[in-house]
Image (cartoon, rainbow, N blue to C red):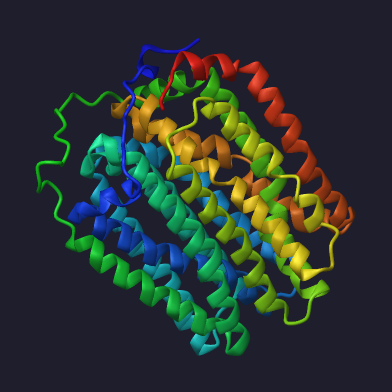
Length: 428
């Protein structure tokens, strides 16, 4: 069944360049510029972390450990982050998170330059970054509607959806792969820290509360934190399209994140020459596909069958994982990862659904529950992928990763009656 909060008047935007409309607002320009620097830095960190861990301990299990620390830190605090986002000024949360991230990567850079870096240092830094992400994402999702008019949210989601994969999954990893391949991992950590500090300065320059477009909220008596959490959970459980989409996402994360984060670096090194650079290119192909998918989806009105389109893109778009697990051809590998990324453009639809069909007063909590359920199995997937690859062939692991989501997407569409729901609640 659907809740009354599901119903919203369609937001209509026109014009070929409507995706650029949010740039009219100063606070958004500062926010998206800072975000771009952070995403570029995080994209570099993905490669720097992997190559630094491999340099310290050439073992897939070691990389699984550090990657699991990042995911585990995020998972452990994501629900707390959602509650905080609905109670504390979101701008303050974002600034605090990015300051902590800069300190963590800066410590890794200094220790690396001094030659005193150890595996446990990488694990601690990964945990700090994971905890920061747990607070950042709900705060960002709740903050965006405060600095932009409602009619520009889809465009803003499209901008973020294009910038994120371009910098975090494409340019950042590619630059880091070349930089670390030609020099040493510590230099990559230094670069990441410098980028984060510059972005932090931009965030501090933001002036909340100025401008007629800023959303003014009415103060309310804040209930107990557990009541806040219960209300958000109740909304998710009693909204079928949301509940089943999150079940699909959590299963997809369990199947895919471990192979992507843990096994791809070793595939690059074992199948191709210049493994560090190739690994960066592999992530770049995935990121370029994601960016293009986000631009295409956000440049058009939401499809009438928005849930069906979203689930189909996510399900069928996973099939090229089968190719990733078997091919030794670099062009074929890059095309397969590009197609997988292209299907991630459906994430723009997902972000808009949350902002359009979730009550604004609980958007932070529902966003945090979204991340919690979606990422519940991420640390398990990362922790299992390395040891599992020693007893199960990589091609079998990636075959399951590619085929299972197709079946799961079909189950979710039918179980939640998504085709009926999307017609009953048009958003285009």
